[in-house]
Structures are given as C-alpha cells and as structure tokens.
Length: 526
Ligand SMILES: Nc1nc2c(c(=O)[nH]1)N[C@H]1C(S)=C(S)[C@@H](COP(=O)(O)O)O[C@H]1N2
Ligand SMILES: [Mo]
Image (cartoon, rainbow, N blue to C red; front, side, top):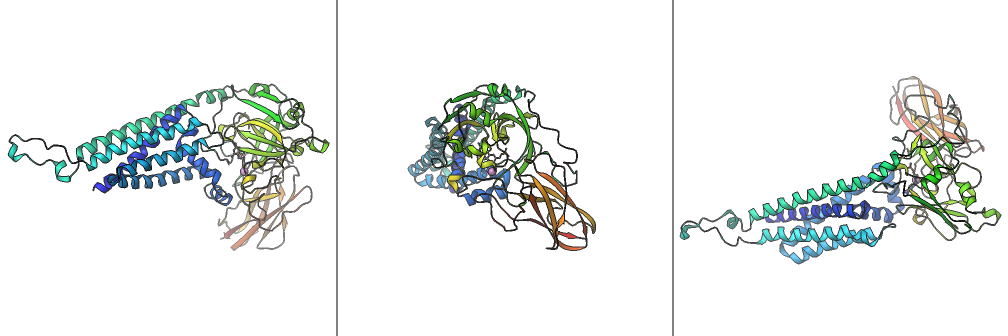
C-alpha cells in the first residue's frame, strides 16, 4: 500500500515539475519547457536512420510520438523515484534535481538556447523536490498524537495509527499538489498561447500585393480529375510537413528582420517583412519534395508561391557567382529555431525561380510552413533549400561549413531526382476486372516530365497519358487505362524526364541524397 502511494507520489512530483515548468516557460519562451527541450535535443542527437524511421512511420505525427515517449519514460522514472524516496529521502530529492538538470542543460544547449532557458526546468525541479518531500513525509510519519478520547484510558486508535502513516495528511497534500499543479499547467499553456497572439495578429494583417510577375493559370488538363489521384495543387492543409520543430515558431512579422551577410557580401542587407512586400514579387507553381520521401511516399506537394527573387537580393548585396570569382559557393539559411540549410550560390543564381516566399496558395505562409518567410528553390530537396522561419542568410563555402543535415550524414548538395508514384489503385486494393484507371504523379523539377510508363507483372511498358504541363518545376499527373484481368497483379511505374533520363529500377534508400527505384503496387483484381 505504502509502496503504491510512494509511486503515486513520484508521479505527482513529476506532474508538478512539468506543470510548474510550463508556467515558467510562459515567462521565458515556450521552447524552454523541458519536454520540448529534451525532445529537441533527442531529435538532434538521433542517428539519421532513426530520424528516417520516425518520419517514415509516424510522418507528421513523429513529434507527438516522441513527446509521448518522453512523458511515458518520465512517468516510469518518477514512480521509481517516489518508491526510492520512501526509504532514502535524500536520494529521492537528488534524483528530482538530476532530472531538472537534464531539462536545464537540454534547454540551454539548444541551437537558439540562452541561459534563461534553464529557468523552467530549475524552478520545476525545486518545486517538485519540495512536493516529493511533503508527500513522502506523510507516508513515513506516524501520527504525532492520537486524538485524545473523552476518557484517556480508552482513546480509540485512529485510522492513521492503524495503517502506520498519516493517511489523511497524505490525501490532503496529494490533492493540493495535483490541483495546484494542474492550475499552473493550464495557466502556463494559456499564457504560452496568448504569447503568440502578436504573431497571429501580424499574420492576419498581411495583405499580399499582386505579384508583378504572376504565375500563368494552371493549364486546363493539368488536373486529370481521377478519383484517388492527388489534386494538381496541394492545399495548405494537405501539404506535407517535415521539420525538427517541436514548437512551431510563431514569429511577429512586424518585428521580424532578415540579415544577408558573409563572405563576398559588399553591402550587407537587413530587411523587414514590409521591405520584402514592397519589392517586385513573383508568383510561381513549384513542387516541393523531401529527401526523406521513400519511393511512393507522401512527402511531396505542389503549391503556388509568392515571393521575391533571391538572386536579385544577393546581387544587391554584392554577391558574385563563384564561377566569376566570388569567394562564397554556399548560402547558409538559418531559421529562428536554429535550423541551418545550405544551398549552392551557383544554383540559386542560375536563373531559376529561387525565392524568399511569403505567400502559399493565395495566403500568407501558414505558421507550419514557415511564416513569415521561407526559401523555395525549384529542383532542390527541402533540406538543402527550403528553410522555414528564415531569419539569416550567410554567404560562406561548402568547405568551411556543413549545415544541419549534412552533419548528420546527408549530402551537401542534393538536386531532386526524377520520380513517379502510383496514387490509384491503392496497395492491396481489389478493383473489378475490366478497365481500371491507374494514375499518379511524376516530378523532375527543373527538367520536366517527358513520359510515364506503367507495366503489369513485369510485362511490356505502356505509355501513360500525361496531364498538361504547368511548368517544368511542377509535377505532372498521369493516367493509364488498364485492361485488368482477375488475379493478383503488380503494377510498376517509371518516368522519363525532358533531359531523356529514365528512372532507374535500382532500389536505393533515402540517405544520403534521395531514394531511387520504381514504385510498385500489388492489387487483387476480382
Ligand atoms: N526551420 C526549418 N526549415 C525547414 C526544415 C526544418 O526542419 N526546419 N525542414 C526542411 C525540410 S527537410 C523540408 S523537406 C521542407 C519541408 O517543408 P514543409 O514542411 O513546408 O513541407 O522544409 C525544410 N525547411
Ligand atoms: Mo526534407
């Protein structure tokens, strides 16, 4: 009984620590709360294979899974600490402080961390230590005195005396701790949410000017409108999200600044959001792809972006092409949450529509997708081009600096590979014999898709019908009418780009610069 209550005390202690930390983090910044900080550190320290596994299996929920994992682990440890504290109060208190220290160190050592970020963990741990002490004391204390009876000789033994500890005192202390902690936690969450109010208001106030170079309308026939096929333009809510941010940064656009500086920058620039909006704006349809996208995977989407040409800004800053003797060959983009993403200067300035994007499908960037400003470079995987929540562009060299994912065994440079995917039929579908539409998307940004072919059970390749081409930076839909006969069948797809390159069937994993191989789907025709 006492053992179980000691474990419960540990749990309550853990809860108190996190709730108090949440409240304090509202005064510091939401990212400083211990679970977020430890989670962030775990993401950074995780081996690439594990990160890849998490993205693949949990997708956009990978971070929720991570946080639940940390909480579950913490709960187990907290119960153990409670049980230990029953016998060795000092060891129990020390353990609580050790957990506080882990949170504090994680928070301070985040790429964007500061000393103040230790506060939530420290205050949380100190409060929790005190709570643990009070609870465990109630479990070990014999009642100081039984209530004196009306006649001293036959004083009834109280419940506390029978069970050997202060049951009533424990219940009161535990209830108080849980209630107060819940209050602190809820208040902390409210304050953290309202702390983002300025950012939310600044986004609501954005009016995107009409671009001076608008995108041409998506051609009729780009969308083949086949059931089960991805729509040509991916809506913001359906757009994949891949990043390391446990707390999505909420930046107030009115105070946001972008710095452009570094090697060979003769005129460093500092730009506000309004500075960017006042410039010449371009609007382009561009398909974005994640290098962690497995063959047939979901991490690809097509959106209409509005932004400023990055090459223009770089020229204004005095940047010269490395091929013309410029000293920098890499642009390192830094986000407010400390992500670093390196892109080749030569690529960004080669005339493609590399931009600092502020609009996505007709609205300001959603917070999840980088508000107020992100980079988009057609033809490069996101991890080498698409920095969200951008705040700094530094010109440097590939020899001098490895960006975040490059330090984690991904390639320094990574153009998007020619890819195709079967969207319908779904794997293990059971369509009826007869004509079955087989359809999907194919992409080869910067080169464009020339041909898509489908085959059944390793037979001859059949040329699919292509949706109209929007631009060479957008994916293309394709459709093939399959005369399906009953039985189990394997469908395979391959694309050829406008450079004449046909996708290799050789299966290669995502690390270090993108997967290859033909997407295949097995179905049972009935
Ligand atoms: N700040 C920041 N920017 C980032 C990332 C990140 O983790 N942090 N991930 C990159 C990766 S790997 C990809 S594929 C794209 C995904 O952009 P999306 O989430 O808007 O689809 O963002 C890129 N920009
Ligand atoms: Mo990515």
